[in-house]
Image (cartoon, rainbow, N blue to C red; front, side, top):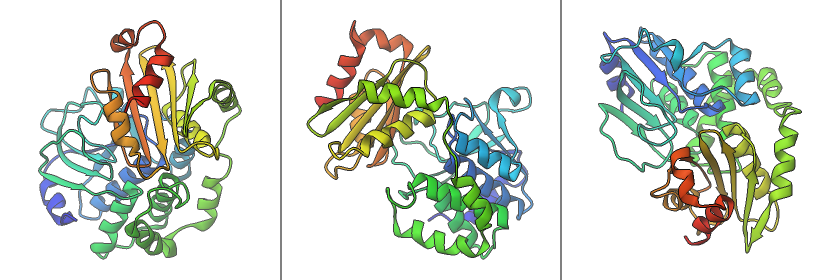
Length: 319
């Protein structure tokens, strides 16, 4: 791992923003929050920021539970300057799921594979089940005890991104669970983990079930209406839960394009590589071996022809 003190030294004397990927999930928010709290222990103030929307109930509950302040880019455009420093957390520049803000992306802390290499003044990119694991390790290695809210948020981020320690888990995820556990507010954590589905989500579940098609061990579902990023990912997990499915591909039509989410429990099929290769020339995408996300912008959708649903299916089956 990189020496966190190098990041502290780098940020001194600069206005600092901690940016998550667009439409941030609990792991992204928890990681950014933990980074803000740790930097503050060294006298460095920062603001959390993102683009898109907070469109996942679990993410909204996390923000409410700890009264976190995270700013949409639209609220910062007047104040952010080119010389301001940005720390990318749970994302990488040009990864396809993050907007290029005005500031200078000097640092990157992420747990996803790299598809577009970039040079940062500080970087810590390692494959773990959750980005919150990397932030928790900074506390542990620096001998800093996280306060109860920070520990609880980080632990929640780890549990959510690893699907309760059943997906992409590494030894470090387990080690950081052990580190955070004594500092955690277990009652608050239990409340966060309950009731993370809304009534309106049932429409999307119905569409996913009605449209599912199986090709060998691969399941495809099309949501014919706009659906939040987070819900598309949840639906991909839902389809993957079928005993007949080893790879799940779920996509949703939107005004600005087509959003995709892929899940794989087949060790021979890397979800991130599969999505990246399938969308080459059409859009962008990538992720972990078990989970990935991607997007085809509207100006490229026409290249799919008159039957985009069939075209998308064939893009994946050809890989």
